[in-house]
Amino acid sequence: MQPKRIRVAVLCGGISPEHDVSLSSGETAARALSPELYDLLPICIRRDGDWLIPESRLDANRSPEDLKPYFDIFRAGRDEKVEGIRRTPVEKVLLHLKKAELDVVLILLHGKGGEDGVIQGFLEFGGFCYTGPGVLASALAMDKIRCLRLLASQNYLVPPYVFRLELPEEFDCAGLAQVAEKKFGYPCFVKPARVGSSVGMTVAHNRDEIIEALRSARRYDSQILIEEFIKGVEVTCGVIDRAREDGAEERLVFPPTEIVVKHSAFFDYKSKYTPGMTEEITPARLPNEMLTRIRDTVGEIYKLIGCCGMSRFDMIVRGEDIFILECNTIPGMTPTSLLPQGARAVGIDFPELLNIIINHALYNFRRR
Image 1: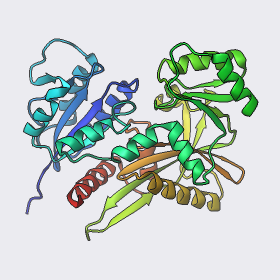
Image 2 (image 1 turned 180 degrees about the vertical axis):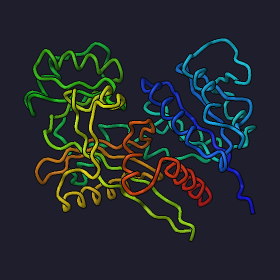
Image 3 (image 1 turned 90 degrees about the vertical axis):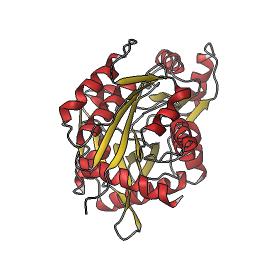
């Protein structure tokens, strides 16, 4: 018997500074989804918040090259009407999504509006099945300050930090810099608290640099985090949930990947998305006992935050200590992304990784 084809929307773009990264994730995933299994509807959220929704799905007769015109239009951001693609204001989106008769939405939005629980709540309200963690876990993981405070309260190691909430556009940079200097000194990281992909993040080595870094970070977010620079082995570790054929659910924690940055002071935006800028080694070059500890710790935090479907955790290992940096609930799916690399280390290729993520979302949706 021919299995039922799954009607999947690949949702990418978004209003955050990670718009272009999201489009790359979306196109990579859309090309990898099997035409034999999926009808496909690529959807882009423009930078201004309007949605670009094709009027019909791509069926089994599509080829990867059929996707190029869609993503060319998504990247162009043109204002004129494009035949076959409906530009839809957000207040009318749910109606058009209902008409598309989707089975599942593959969320590949990064940053604000996509990874912070907003799109998850929107889709929940519309009654749609979607991939990845739900509203609460997404919002908590995206908020670096509150996530670190939760982890520290449960006795997980995090870098020493200071923070400020809801800073005005003009604020006392020198005063905030002095607080960080007294607590841990230099170098230190300055980060917008609710932005991903290292956007707006800077390493500061002195008073002048930290003041400039604070001003830069404030352009992206009103909440600012300053962390001690922990020197050690940078590691990331991915997790996915899989629905088994026997109806049970299992959690797969991938081998930790060591990140070796070649041409930057840290794993910044350019290093993350430029091929050849970093070396990723899976499993990380750490003792087996430490690799086991990392995987166990990641599994615990995944459950603590309330993640499901997929997530990826970044950390620094210094000696016997594991410092948790952050949780990414919608990891990148670009050609250089780390979750697919972790999956490959256990024999799961990229198309199969997408199959697992989508099938778990359907499994989880049926259980509600």
